[in-house]
Every structure is written in structure tokens, then in C-alpha cells.
Length: 52
Image 1: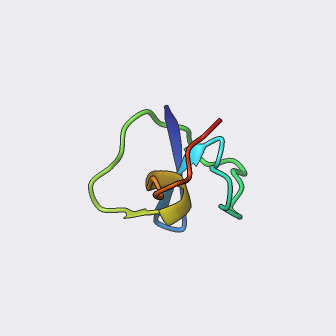
Image 2: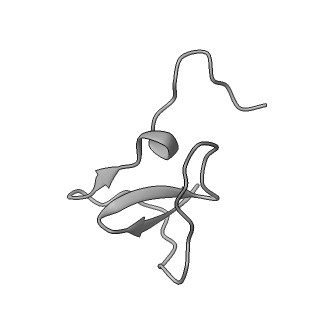
């Protein structure tokens, strides 16, 4: 899975449903750095919300 960081918040690429952020020219990475916030839409699995 690929990630990008925007305004000190990490998002998946492509972004999950419900996330309003978009990747402009942020670097794509395959690791999650230590001191960043996690996007609740991209980085969490909500009960009852499974990807099809």
C-alpha cells in the first residue's frame, strides 16, 4: 500500500471513501513515519464499512 503526507497527516493512495484530501505533488512512500497524524478515513477501519 502507498501513502502520502499532507499537512502532517498521512493518507493512503488512492484515498479512502469519505476522505476529502487529494494528492498534489507529495512524495509517495510505502512506510508510515513515526510522528504524523493518521487520517481517520484512510487509516482506520470503521465497523460495518468494508471495501467491496
